[in-house]
Length: 131
Image (cartoon, rainbow, N blue to C red; front, side, top):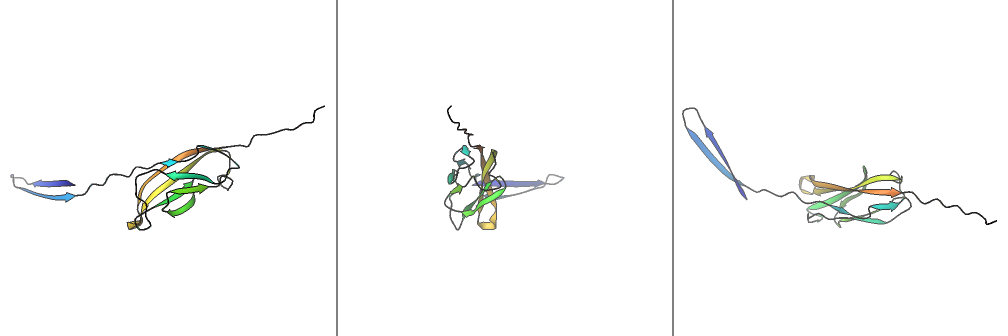
């Protein structure tokens, strides 16, 4: 709790002050944990929200994205399963797993965070007959 004090001083020295108590909320910490490198053929890779917002169906929920594609909405379990074989993120290279923390009250975004995931190609194999 903090007190905000406003004073208005007019020409000639007359002053009027007023104060109000305000609640200052800290910004929630936000983090994502999961595999940092996956094969392009990987399915069922789990990513977990590691922030401090208390998830609940009535108060706070998560939306999950891979790059700009939403993969889960209104999650209150704090995790998502990503199938890396699905388009449009089934390409070799760096992709972002992002989580947005939302408040049900006013549907406002409280915070967001992401982690980069490197999608690796399958190794090439060659089998040749011995001679």
